[in-house]
Image (cartoon, rainbow, N blue to C red; front, side):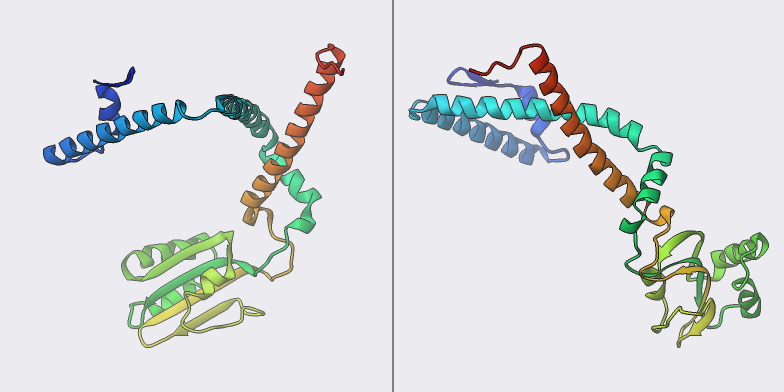
Length: 247
């Protein structure tokens, strides 16, 4: 334990602040440096406290800061309860349906399957047949095949992904307009892509593609509305109860 001008630094405080994994020498060095800095901080505080004439202004600032912290903590607790109730999946869908104009695609999105295999991989004839179909049987064949032969295998028949994420995996730039099944190759690999669904830039974004964005927007809207209503209700109750007195 260390004491400086009536303030104490306890062993457990130093232990909690000491990084894990230090050698004995480094640990001792850290503890000495920590105690030195703590002592200097206490001494500087005492010196400043005794030489600042307007302590009342500082007390006012401290009280205001404390009040803000308490209010923010209270609002956060209420908001967590409120937002958890307001952001059910149905609430998200309803918000999306009402505000469809806010959810326009900024780039194309698609669903499909992509597989990349070495140029001389086995059973390429079979791969050409499998990748063009999205039946459970052909998908199963491709998944088993990819475990031993594919450099990359991505299944996204069931979710929307950005077209740019897929196109950057291909050896050359291509347009997806009107194309659904394609095979490309370079000096080392074959690239197979089957696009089952495609939406272009400017079209309405699918709900499941923008669900995270929908949730963020709904939560922000609910937060602003809730805080405004909370303040108004508190004010009206205070007026009714005679707690606000105008002189």
